[in-house]
Image 1: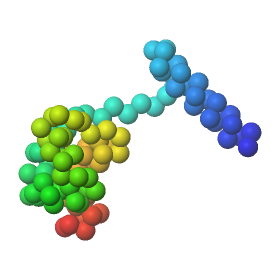
Image 2: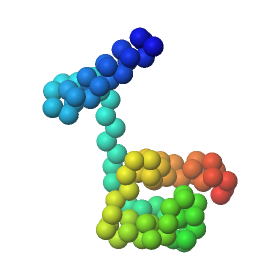
Image 3: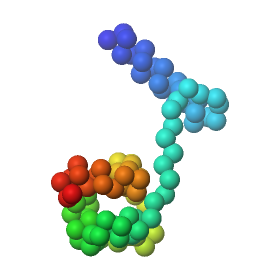
Image 4: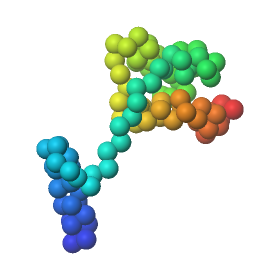
Length: 96
């Protein structure tokens, strides 16, 4: 338990330093915005097919494609992977 506590404490300290703009050992992943409509077009999927494949609603996909909303968290990660390695994602989802 002590080892876990020390790890969490160290991570929290790094997060606080980062948030305060101080040099930190925190690892921060900045993901690029993606052109979702272009990704979908490249793989030849309709909005309905794409939304279904990735477990999102068609409404959410439309908002993303129009720029009304932006994907975040795991969705943004997956879309970045999809943009760079679409065949790998499609294989993993058994679409290829």
